[in-house]
Amino acid sequence: MLIKQKENPELPIVSDPAQAKLALDKTGTNIDMTNFPVHTMRDDLKNLDLGGQEKVPAPAPVFMPTPTPTPTPISTPTSSQGSSFQQSIVMEKKKESSAGGKGVFILALILVLVMLAGGGYYFWMTRLKNTSDDTVAIETTSPADQNPIRTSQTGAGGADNATLPAFSESQANYLSIDMQNTDALGLQATLKKTADSVVQLNATGPIEFILTDKNNNPISFQDFAQKISLTLPENVLTQLNPTFSLYIYANNAQPRLGLALAEKNNASLKAAMTQEEKKLTHDFAALFLDPAYQLDNTTVLKSSVYNSNQIRYVNIPGATNLSLDYTFTNNQQLIIGTSRMTTRAILDYIDKTVTQSAK
Image (cartoon, rainbow, N blue to C red):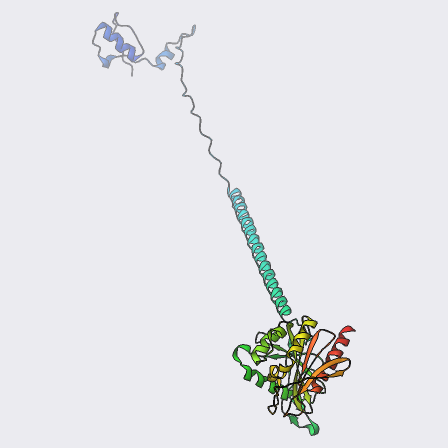
């Protein structure tokens, strides 16, 4: 529907409503907006001159807004990439765990080796100390052979005799003494019991013993002499070494004792023994196992020779096959015997032992 505008020469024709309003404001004329004409493209097409072209106002420039740069999104791993990433993390953790496990294993192995080395060193030092303590000048049996006990002894007719200790006749035996809990009488009783066992063995030679304490340490002669009440003077004891052997010999079924003492100085010891001769029977009286004997205060020793050994002796009254003998050997030992045959048997035993050691 077209609204026809009344002709008004003072009113300009404008197509823009804003401009129309401005024109109206300039003329001050009130316009009836109901009769306000609207110019449309259809009117332009009807009024189009074929001979010429109507000027079409240039379109208003269109201002495009400047595009705001869109921030690039951080790429996130796909499911396959995420799986690979997780697997790599798991592998790294496994490697770290494996490396830690290897470190702990190596440390534990080092600790075990150190403990084994320490235990071996302690065992070696302890065994070395025991070996040093058990070393004596006279040949002895091994500790495993200490006082082996024969469980039974079969005699003629197949009957078992009483159980007897089996002592070695070719090397030293060990005799343990509780030095802390025994006195002179107790030590003499132990020697008498052992001597009676030796007699029952019917041994042809003397049986050698090394006296040891409860800890298997050899007892020194000085301690033995004090415990059993030997009254040797100081000038004799100081010329003797601690190592010694005790011998038991069956002299016609009578047990007799003997000693082999290591010398320090032969000349000094000989002089001290010569000076002490009158008292020697009293000094060594604790070794006389036979109770039926008498001691003379006017003791005079005599001399004899056996296999080039000079023997000084005196017979003890009141007992059979009882005397006090002493002699010096070529291997720096002082031999004490309580009968003539005991002294000679000990000399033969020592000569045999020295000969065997020299081979």
